[in-house]
Image (cartoon, rainbow, N blue to C red; front, side, top):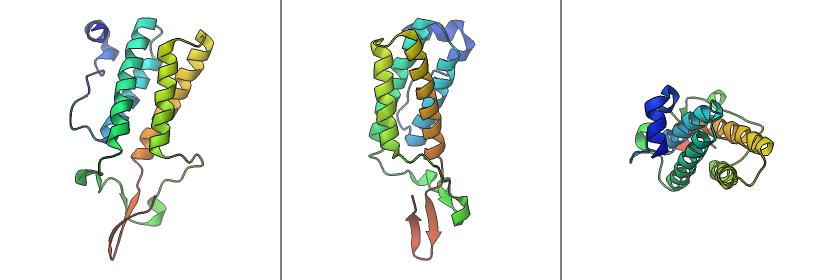
Length: 153
């Protein structure tokens, strides 16, 4: 209920629309990206905890979305035309693991178990992990071969 009030009074909360059915893993990751961006812009404790709640719910949906097949309409976006189009990163973690890390951070932040300085650091870490995950989930992972589409990463 508090988020609805924020939406009416603060323009940056307009983007905090509710989750909708049919969101795939990229939609959910982008939703989390918007949430953590707004989170970094507020110092008001009540707003932060409302956003943590939304992030927790979205991460739960994201975890479930990994069990679903990649939607056909996403395949062109995730398909590379050649090997140079693949995104390589030094940090290697499966998207499911990143989601678990984000969920754990969110739970710690919601529990208010950490002092304010530690909460700030954990919030920054959550921001970085969510943004990394969005980039990683949107990165190419398939290539076309003579025998059909092959998942490369």
